[in-house]
Amino acid sequence: MESEATKVEEMFGKIREYIEVRVELLRLKSINKVAAFMSSAITLVILIIIFGGAFLCVTLGASFLIGDWLGRTCYGFFIVGGLYLIAGLLIYSMRDKWIKKKVSNKLIKDLMD
Image (tube, rainbow, N blue to C red):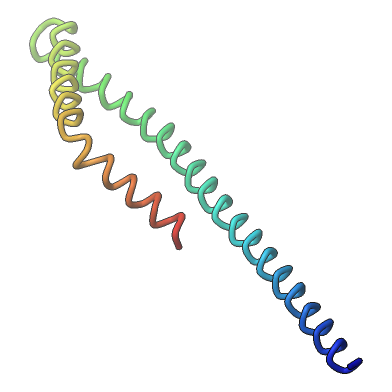
C-alpha cells in the first residue's frame, strides 16, 4: 500500500511541478510579447517625430517655392494645403483597405506568434 501511496504522491508532485513550469513559461512569453510591442511602439513614435519634422520642413519649403513662382507666398500655402486636403480625403475614403486591415493583421500576427 505504501508504494502505491508513494507513487501517487510522486505523480502529484510531478503534476504540480509541470503546472509551475507551464505558468512560468506563460509568464515569460507574456513579458516577451509586451516588451516586443513596447519597443515597436516606441520606435514608431520616434520615427513619426523625425519624419514629421522633415515633412514639415519640406512642406514649408514647397509652399514658399510655389508662392515665389506665383508671386504671392499665400498662394503656395493654399496650393500645398489643397493637396494635403485631397490626400487626406483619399486616405480617409480608403482607410479600411489601406490602414485598418494591415494594422489589425500585424497586431494579431505579433500577438499570436
